[in-house]
Image (tube, rainbow over all chains, first blue to last red; front, side):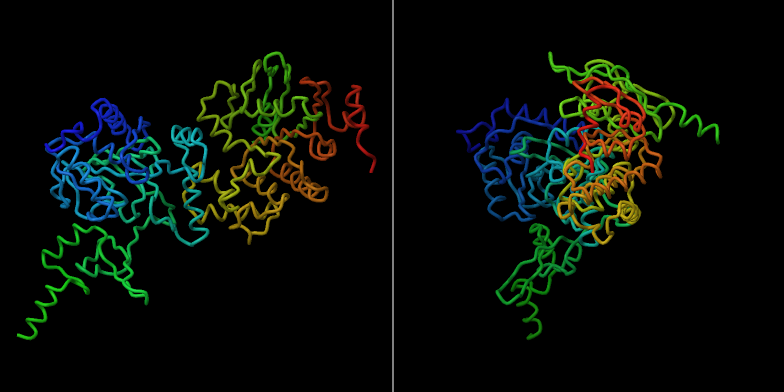
Length: 298
Length: 265
């Protein structure tokens, strides 16, 4: 332990108990938003205060923590949160999806399939999927209670009327365990099928909105759609420029001011893993090219 | 079949039994009783503050009565007390078998979503899950309320007042309700638009065999649409009867005043 100035994982034990109770309730009612007494955290709202509190409440000394932001292990948000828990809890951290026991994520689900001993913690900005259609919180709660979800289809209808297809690309509404409609946090809809029947426990924390919800392992998660406009995951139609993956979610990276761009895996761990295993894309790093050139010359 | 029809129209759809509402010592509505039959249009007229809107809210289950009750004959033929219905049942009833046309269309419509979605919302709420069919039904209804189908994807905030009101009517009628409540549906519209709306309403009501409770302070609306009239004053019903009887031969001094207040054309 190198963190004598803090209680283990920053939060005091009573707060952690309170959050754990909310988590247990959330697991018992899949997809239902459980209110909890969200605390001020030493980071701004919108940076994952909800996810951090959930992680703090479930973290044990022997856990191995991975934090990703938009799939990447090396962005400011991910590094800060990883350091935060390394300092306040002294837990081991990793960038490997497979080795981690707790994965806190913002806006992505890792490409590698998760297993039973893992917990995926999502950072959620707006937990209420009906918010932009029905601004009254009292009314949306009633709609959840009575399972009145016609309004959610109004949003999808609007998409088709305006764009000819369901244009919602992220935060795509899902129905959990055939009961509650849930906002999967702003993950791309590409990730929605991964939530269905997932072996890992999925927890969602919204700090500013003071809500926790959960998908227990092996729970049915269905993306909403119309019979004649079925749900379709979306990805850029290109292989990853670094690892050549054809089935991973891609980020578009603008490389100069003349319109050049490259598509690379948003999940950095997955991409690096593939490159280490010998896969390569059109713009792979130098060693592979040097090697190829060397072979050609030699 | 004929017997069935007879039975259908022979029993009241909505029964108000000594409905009262008071706020402390202020009585908003006192001992109102009536029965509404299928296909019948009842107008509730009176000046502002006479308790018309309070009564309408109690009838439509949006406001709990201080005394008395409302019962409604459900689609399965069983007459049930509205107060005894669960919230889920009441809301389902409101979305399917009932309609409510507000005076201000902004209250009854979603102003930010397209006209098609506004009409389709009730269908989606009862489980329609086929975009093509929902859209077909929405266009059909827009045509019936004389809105150009080309405007189906426009939001009602780009519509004129008269169009909004017609859209609100389409939105309410799409699930084939048997009873529609209307709260001053022509208020705030200019005279020519009012006339067109009334004409449309009259046709729809006859065609769909709708029962309607319409609250209005405009006696011309009552004369044109309704079969029966209830005159309210100070929370009480002071006169009730067939529309032409009440309006052409008013008995109560207040009704006489109301009728004589209309400017001659």
